[in-house]
Image 1 (cartoon, one colour):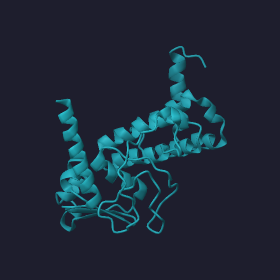
Image 2: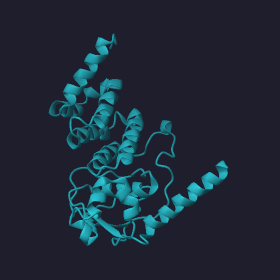
Image 3: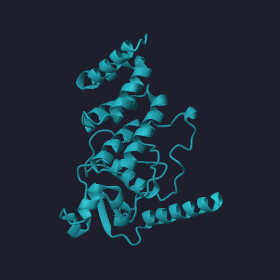
Image 4: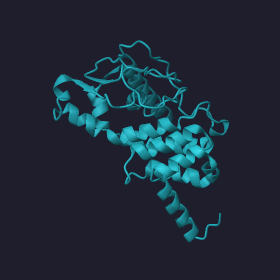
Length: 249
């Protein structure tokens, strides 16, 4: 019985992967930067209230069949599109830092970057392994902490709650290893500039990583981030809570 269930699940995932890669039967186009995605309302809309409203005619995009995301990071959007069809997103071998606009390259090297119906012709359709196919203790070639933080914020913006939870889980797992990397510091800044105060998930993950590895505060670049954002207050309250419970440093 379990074998048949696994076979059925694999068949479903393979069919979704094919739809994603080929864009067959697409009834919606999503653009970001130089990238164009031929996607399917039946797959996208149930997972995102934003896209559901856009396709239900509440926005002008419902009439044109094209949704443009000009203000978002193309790398993060590409991974969000991948998630819609695979319930996961692949590790990136290159992380784009800083603001991206249409004049910049938006095609990072990655283990897999699929672009359904893409007109750019620059993306790979290689079928991915699990984003965490390498055991955590072996480490990560290139830290993806900033990417996880960006995807967390993007998922909140477009109400893709499954992706938001996944990005947070991946961040926590990788932060256990990459807390001493420059990418962790960039991710901390990303978390505190792309989320609101009441959204505690990613912010608390950053605070907890620093609590567990407070030596990272010796870095001047980390100190600069702490000074500029609410991270300073959050750390103070976290350490106060621990002291109140008898924790000794």
